[in-house]
Length: 488
Image 1 (cartoon, rainbow, N blue to C red):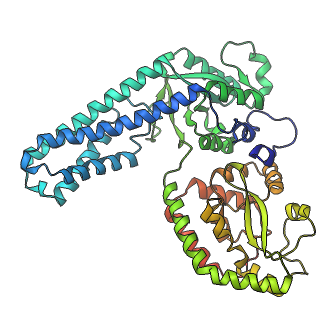
Image 2 (image 1 turned 60 degrees about the horizontal axis):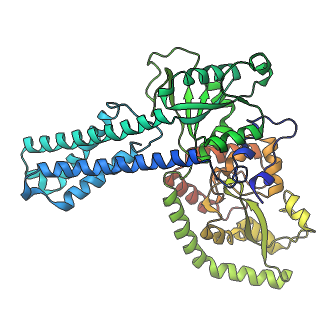
């Protein structure tokens, strides 16, 4: 089963925007296969990021050669190199979705090199060097790094002029086509619009004959544009589009597109404040709207936390689970483990495990009945398992396997995923992240028969503001509430 068959789209006529869930889902794009142009652009960006890392390493080596031989401590300069690279990475200086000018990065690069040298000098034998020697080494380091980066960025800029990145323009059809036409008149900007995704199609008839990229009016049109052109850049026209189409834009970012917001209507004189990635594109003010999709920063740490804690808790909770299973077997007969299909990250189904506390009348009831927590035929022991959430402990195995995470949006059955996706526009966006045993919604009391709209809002807020520390706090608050009667 794929996300397309699981998450139903709203009934009635479907525009390209409304159908974005199926267009961009794992199944909708032939399991993620992209056109050669898209693969080439991705490889080019990765190579550019690798070259920038090599440049920073070579610059540190060049600075080491300036230092007198008795003070060339290999370990010290290795730590300096790693420290500067870590600072640059944290400042997104290896984010190749933006190609800065020759002088744009100079303050950031020099500042981080100075911080790296200050830390190394304070903690190593290099503090015995004269001030003039230190200043000379820092100057050589900074000049080499900036020169090398200028070469890498210049090469990337020339490649983009030869082969601009295909892009989709999202926004009101008239404004989006005006922006697309302006970009096509400036091939040196490195972006080539291949389609306009618009939702105000009632005005399309008046301008349909105008030259320019086609207006994508159906799901199939958007799908073909993404696949055939290898689109990885999306230009969002106007703040209203950003707000109204937040779910779509998050989905595009999760798929791997670089999202830019262009200000096509109001004049801009540099008074709007500083934004990361801010600049201009063919004269239009632009800024990075959302981070690139794919592997989220800290995801490796989140997965490590899941594996370590779930493995430890499985060992510690093993005797408790065994006792509960034996009591269930004695009181209610065979069939201690309850297996049910749930929807996980990116709409992929998995089998979730629980201790059985109720026997549904049929498979259809199990898949489509919302809550059985108050069934009168449940034994006292089963009620106890539900009140204390002990029936959920088997999901630690799902976490250990990688089907779920300890913290994340709660997984739901396919029937309700389809139903809630129609009723709540932001619901499909919950599947951007691996589902969890507990989450921000659950620690705010949103369990059992509570508002889906509220759950959806909390889940998306958790994903948008995710941090490893937030996971730790949610786990601690969950542990404090573990024995409270909450139901499921």
